[in-house]
Length: 616
Image (cartoon, rainbow, N blue to C red; front, side):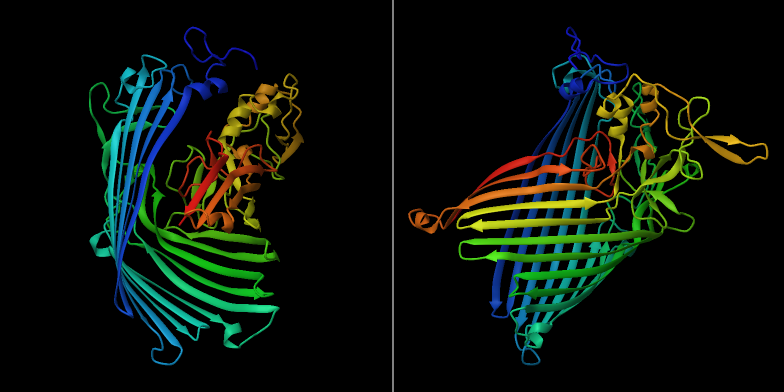
């Protein structure tokens, strides 16, 4: 601390070779985003008869996201500097035409029916345009015109996806205690081959309110319902997965690469992913059963649910031997099972004219397993931007998304093997399962209080178990930037482990490691990607706090408003992670199917807000 980190003349980074000073990074490597979004919904409804209504509903959700990433010259990642400008455009239109028929006392007394018939059109457009400017000639001017190379990474991506659906549902209710719902939907997708692009999926549910059926009247037991459901859901694929396409040729990885055009010559190459013109839709079948109970005039209510799901014919990119010329191929592959329980308890400890206290407690526990993939394949990477060498994967017999990577070699009793010459870890074993990002269970508790016009609420929750692989932690540990690396950093260290020895009869024996190494070698030996970078993702969090006030009625009588409310809120105010020195509720890859990876991503933000609401 206190040492120079910037060249006073050039402004360049001043730090260890190949490593950026964190303070210089904060000021000179920046990403900004400006998002403009419009959500518009219009409804037109008409009652043709007292029992027949027709409705048309149209909705448009469109946004433009303009992003700029600036890397000032002299950084270790991009020494010559770089400016990347990106524009993401997405537009989704959904139109529904719905006819609803309602009839009471149909076929028999007390039997009510509602029939809904609908047709839907969904259209999704996407476009991304990227301009990458390399070799900046001027620092401090964040404009791509100051670069001399524009051929790397510059390009455009577009897609169009349409879905046409026909659906219906029939709701039957008998004397307000027995309910039956049947649904069905037919979808026609533009992303599937014509022979397989139309698919049907149904559902059915039943519920029985036995307290009403048997006229149960009690101040203790107020409400009881049992319910069950079975459903199937079909899904199409992403655009342009039916064929193998060409793209601008590029070779390399996220550290170094070569892109065309090169030296004025253009080049295109067949994609690394092999398309499949015979794709079928994927289906998920689910079964669910549960109970709802109310006690003490419903001041205490309990909901419990058990569910089981099976996904089949999943459309996934499967790993392919490089000898085929492809890295992956799109296929209908495998089966994934999910099962779990969910619980919700709501209670009102205090309820009076001036003061109320309501609380809800929820709990979720889910277990899943990759049952099968495709003949001859037992593991495959999950599509997405993962680390090279650390890959979230489908592995038969394991939970979904386990992370495969390098694992430190160990003796039969689980102790780390040490190189007898260097005192460092023995070579790592590649292709091992090192982490499981799936939580053991999750829970949350929400409390809300109101006193006259004043309201206060807070939500605390927890994620228990699960793993996260932190490239960030290992990177800073290797560079001596974490607090733990500063303790006795001038003293030699000994890596806890054993040294393998071969006996005269050929058997193996192990003796404790006693080879001293420098503190620098000790921390660097942990590596950037290995099982030593895996952390327990258990975390406790104060998720949200809200304080609000509504003007009393005598004041509102002198105003032209029916209600005036002001509230203050804060989110992500505090967390406690007992087994990690960072917030484990993060994912560098963002939204998607890849979880449990941390690659120097930004920390979660703490947000504050003020809300004013006026109603007439």
